[in-house]
Image (cartoon, rainbow, N blue to C red; front, side, top):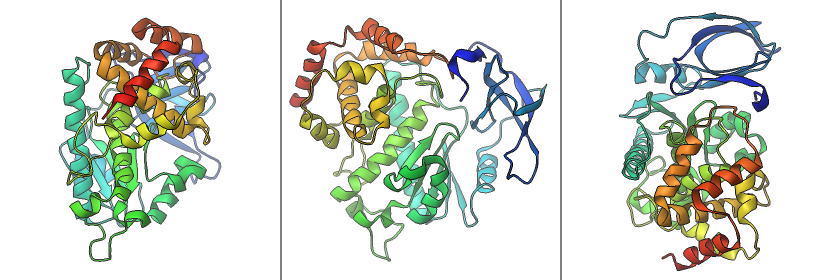
Length: 376
């Protein structure tokens, strides 16, 4: 990644997009020595590194020395149609994929069309709920200016073969993910997961009975969680690759993800009690956890601490949205102004939080805990 301290310029919201065509050197194993990429400069480092955003929203990070030539070009005459975007994505995927275009999404799939339609309807429902929730809260969200891409594999094996390049060793523990660089959600047909596996006659056909199983709740929650990340980074709530604290990103996603087994879709509304996160939070007994959670992202990167960190992020976010919503919206507005690859520090994080909500001390920690205990 571009070193934050070396960033010479970032493209702010008021700056005219600078479209360029760059020739970059390819990896040694590539068939061609160079490739051409066109896009908008989102960040530029003094040493020549570039962060470029392509037309479909994909981000490319080019380190110093990789860019061999660059030339300004006029902006595209017109945006690609959603079907054009989808056809290009299909060209990057294994054979057998088909395309489903909805109001806000382009879904590329090689499972049943019925499953793709169910997943697309879930994401569309989330899209409307997400934008309405933040707009009513007074948050400056905007509709994405391009279709959001979702890739659905027919089974876990094909998904893992594809996802390993993004997730590495964590692939077998994740049923879906949002990639901040590609700007895509990738998952697979959850009706084939061992915990909720349908018989051969209903594989690929998510029924209300199937979705009502407790085992399915976490899987549907994962789709909502990752879809929330995608929306947050495309509606202006967060800026991709900006120094947004992980507790905020994950707190918002866990606040939205709460499953509803009484719903035929497996998910119904925003801000329901997220019982798995609540149970995990209530099992924790250590004190002095709040400031470290806010100060850095280390706990989310450690396998032995991540589950606790997610539960705490959910608890803090729920507490702030339910009791200090306007302050939380104002805090999000401060974070939304941060640019990709911008420098950050632990001190700055604590100062920004304190300015919005007060010092994250033992009294606030106890208030969060009491709030979670009272939740029903």
